[in-house]
Image (cartoon, rainbow, N blue to C red; front, top):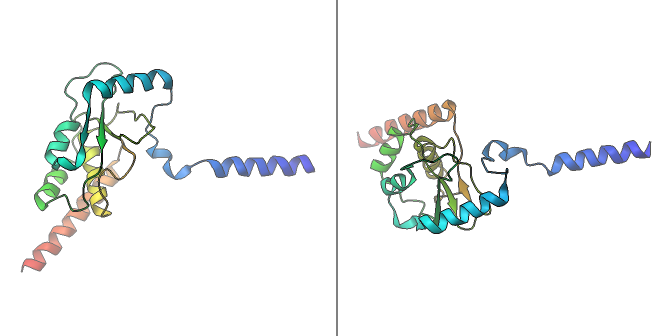
Length: 176
């Protein structure tokens, strides 16, 4: 009986230590981690990093575009700092909405303070635009996470398009 009790406690302890809320966001590299850490360090030294607060949204997205790809290359933009919460203009929002369905390959964003190496194999410009819009909707600076490499589905795109439609409707009513 006592063994059963300990097994049950260990089971619940194990389950409680898992972070289920972020499982779909865990788009990070685990395989061959030591090799990837060295590759990431070399990649960052070669490509440098940017101070994100000095860029506008179009400049940022231009930096995020993958120029050339090699098999298994790390496509990561290493950044320092964050933007202000009000860094986007209405024109920026329109531009971001117009590209949320883009499947052009993009880099993941990794803040200098991050200890993760994001996996950029499936990252797109559309996903990065959605991440920027989500930070705006939450009134948060960008990047609002240690790394930005989330892959969104059509449901999120539809949600953002509906949000934008409602935002434009409210803006038009206020102008009338």
